[in-house]
Length: 493
Ligand code: BGC
Image (cartoon, rainbow, N blue to C red; front, side, top):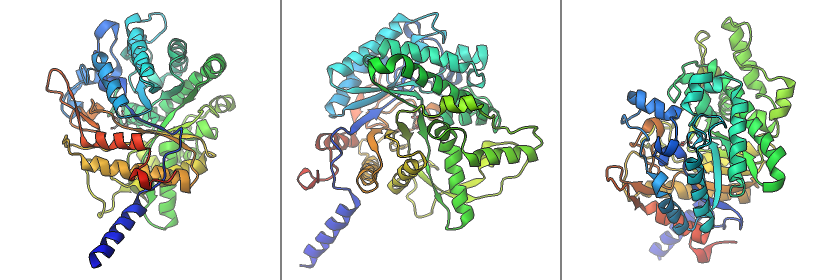
């Protein structure tokens, strides 16, 4: 009897943890990846060098294992195998990106690389033949190196027109196949890490100054692409275009007002810098005020955060047909003093990011398996941006161990998917899709081949670059088939 009671309690607590509802009928359930990280063929058939090719080739010391993406998963040749895996998993969508350098090697429309265009047409055909919906990112960090050299990339306002031309080219060429578009992936990583801290390509160190210039130009570039779609393609192709924002949830470090304010600052500088102009118009007020105040104290004649004109505010506002979110983790945020002096994005935020000692450590200092953070984040986005349609465009488990028995990944996926169901059914968040990162291990930027997020392991040392099934691939397959996280017969419609 005692044993029976105990097992009831265990089953009950398990059942309480995992939401028993089914995913809604049209819910998108898929996996993601990006051109640089999987394709390889970095200079094949007319592809030009991107800023990440250049960065890895010239500064290998900046990549954890000194590697590059020259071959990566060889998806340039193995895309049919990749699509077959996605199909076998029973997934209904695949987020992939187009390499600007593969279709327009000069970065401009004067020189179309037909072989590159044909590659993506082949990929789209393969997806279509297998009933998988593509979600296509135009810019997943791989600016043509020549544009960085010729005009300074995102530091130059004319990037908006160049990106617009590239976007129009893709909408025209692939618009019949692709209805879900993402303009730019994770602008914060592009600007704050690429043009501010300088840890990512193109490696520009202009913290607290150049990163804000980049942010403004990037938003104008995104808006340009959205308007082009809206005016020239929407009626014909009936698709949707969004920008991806990324961030960790910032949980207030205590009930103090100061810590609550620190959490809001972390969110508004992190996500709001890009989300607010697109969903509400203009930079978030608290970001504007804070950077202006600090700039003045630092002796600048005007704010380091460049202002938008009224016309630009209007042009950018409303340019996301859904909210695309990349989310991996949660951290605590407490108020902290940041000295006036050296301008820096982090000093502008002045929030200390920390982890609770009871949280299970992982291979990364910033990464914890805390699904409640995703649920809070989704609610924050719902309330801050007027209840938009939301697609989670990335979420997944980072490991430095490439084991096939990836129970930690399964634990993470189960918890985060359950948090999605809670958000949908309990909180009425308008969440319409979930995309796991990633279908397979890949080249993880500065993490090289030493950071693993795949449901399939890639043996990068084997010349055939085989895809090897992990336990989590089986788990995700069952979910995709059942569309539910618990036993099918106990699942609630
Ligand atoms: C990026 C991906 C990357 C993932 C995991 C995201 O920031 O969009 O390209 O692989 O994080 O590190």
